[in-house]
Amino acid sequence: MSEYINGILEDLKRLNPGQEVFIQAATEVLYNLDPLISREDKYKKHAILERITVPERTVVFRVTYVDDKGKPQVHNGYRVQFNSAIGPYKGGLRLHPSVNLGVLKFLGFEQIFKNSLTGVNIGGAKGGSNFDPKGKSDNEIMRFCHAFMEEFYRHIGNTTDVPAGDIGVGGREIGYLFGKYKKITGRFDGILTGKGLNWGGSLARTEATGYGLVYFTDNMLKKAGLSLEGKKCSISGSGNVAIYTIEKLYQFGALPITASDSNGYIYDSEGIDVALLKELKEVRRERLSEYTKFRPHAKYISVNEYAPGRNGVWDVPCDGAFPCATQNEVHLADIKVLYANGCKFLAEGANMPSTLDAVNFMLAQKDFYFAPAKAANAGGVGTSGLEMMQNAGMTSWSFEEVDKRLRGIMNHIFEISYATSEEFGDAGNLVLGSNIAGFRKVADAMIDQGYV
Ligand code: NDP
Image 1 (cartoon, protein in one colour):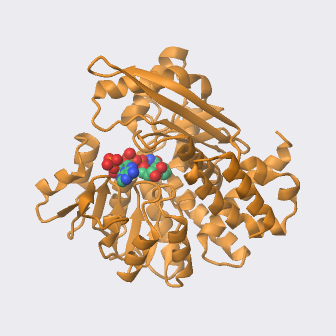
Image 2 (cartoon, rainbow, N blue to C red; image 1 turned 120 degrees about the horizontal axis):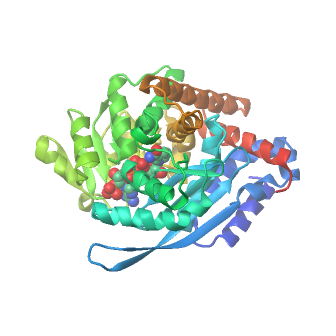
């Protein structure tokens, strides 16, 4: 690694103490940019790495709401507006107790390059709160979302910053957030994506991240002369991304056999019943353990039974793995078990689900195919871009039209990532290809716009 890049990383570590996941994300990106930076002098000359690793703006605010017992509850609200060189800030809102500034900086940083890869002109951002929606009543969720928007409305706009969902934020939360925005401002603007279909949402946005992940994987396997047909696939998570990954895998002839949440995982040898999963998670908002009541042959394994330091879902032998829950859920020990059990590919639905050493292990295996998150899960934000286009044109497209465009976006991302990996002499290394391709467009825009 060049001394220049190591120096930037050392500065980042010094200036961002305690933000380990942000440093992890920055390390991966900067290491992969090394061949480009050493080849083209202009990025160093214009201090692009020094600038792109610092958010343009970070907003931290207090959110107070009253719970069902009449007690005030106080949380931190955040928005990290990382980079707007190629378009308005765009990136989801996460509601989870693990949320802090470091987590949102890692997500916002990744979002810059992911959004660039989509070909839609959108900048990178991320936001959210350490509020835990689990176990809260509908009214508590509404009061929290309204309280969040009481401050947040000042920082967003349909040409400045357009947030969407992420962990803990789906259609219900977007509705409450939007309602409060409209009440305060009196404006019906497309300031959020993932909206309800009756009031400006796009068909296929709910499905987009999972569907896009499978489209990307299909491209990657085809390039290697393989296919998803007949493949047993292991999926982690049971939220938005996991559900629609499972649904689309069936359409490609694959057999998805697992799903998980933070309490354990389900192994269904006959294939996960996706209608049941939707009913449990989207309608009843139940825990995943309820699944076996309806499918008694399926096995539920609780986290208490996992081996120490392991994510148990990866013990299930499979041909392909789709981590779709959260960051750092595939460790080196997990990927070694997957590989030893015959797994031939891993496609990331969650953001940064694999640790750096797990990624390096995958890249080192000549017979293993790895689809990194910033390329493979970009279908959600790409389709959010399509929702913005429909809002701007005051129109709505059919499901088939949006799905066709989504597939086009995923094909484009695969092609540009693969072509860039070839250009830099490591054909098929999609980590290298996606990082360089995503970076180049943003960095060149920053050079065009001068030192701002
Ligand atoms: P959801 O809230 O719909 O689902 C999250 C799922 O992951 C739940 O099953 C949840 O289980 C599980 N999970 C969350 N945190 C943990 C944890 N710490 N340990 C174990 N399991 C956990 O979120 P999404 O499906 O929308 O998001 C999943 C991932 O995909 C995230 O990394 C997100 O950033 C990424 N992503 C999402 C996009 C989208 O369009 N929604 C777009 C691109 C990326 P439990 O209920 O027990 O918490």
